[in-house]
Length: 100
Image 1 (cartoon, rainbow, N blue to C red):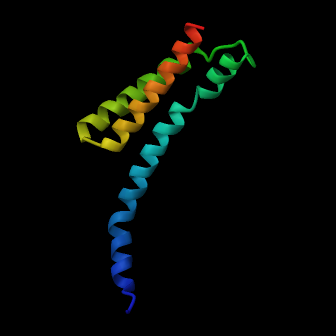
Image 2 (cartoon, helix red, strand yellow; image 1 turned 90 degrees about the vertical axis):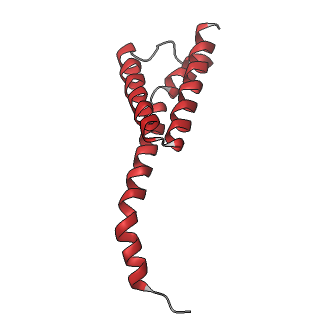
Image 3 (tube, rainbow, N blue to C red; image 1 turned 90 degrees about the horizontal axis):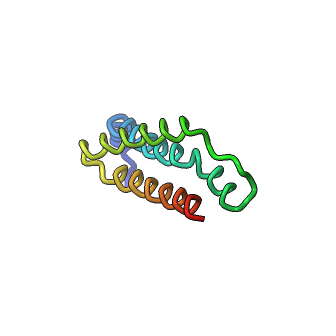
């Protein structure tokens, strides 16, 4: 079987940028969700008694909400599931802290 280098190069030239852009967008949503997780877990375990700044949390949730709306408009199931799951996890952590 002969390896068609030109076909591989053509595939990479036409598809690699989309794969990279989608992957970076997905990773961005995960990293933004993880921004306050360490502070919330430290608060729950008693290692810290300081909450994350309210403006940080509000801007983070606003950005994620806009990314979620974009994913819904584009019908991007992976980002809808990822961002939705992140919202659920953060809401549960905040509820556990609030009702502790």
